[in-house]
Image 1 (cartoon, rainbow, N blue to C red):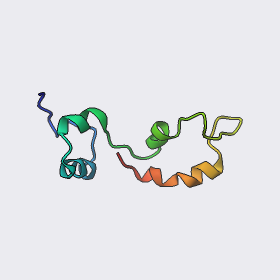
Image 2: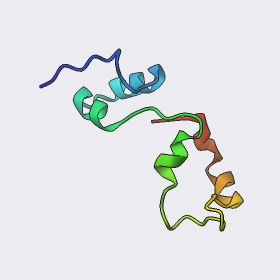
Image 3: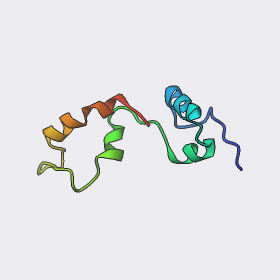
Length: 75
């Protein structure tokens, strides 16, 4: 098992603590999860061709409003 330095992770402190408290093996979440903030979550969550877009490729306003909470960040 590799030792993971929790000081060199892609986690915000509150997200890291949530995962540590969850009891999930550290190696599993360090290899598969990272904190997202700002507009970055859109790149990870709203890439499906099934999500409606305008002719210029931008998400439609209705979808932007539906998912606006993701700018608050998460993991």
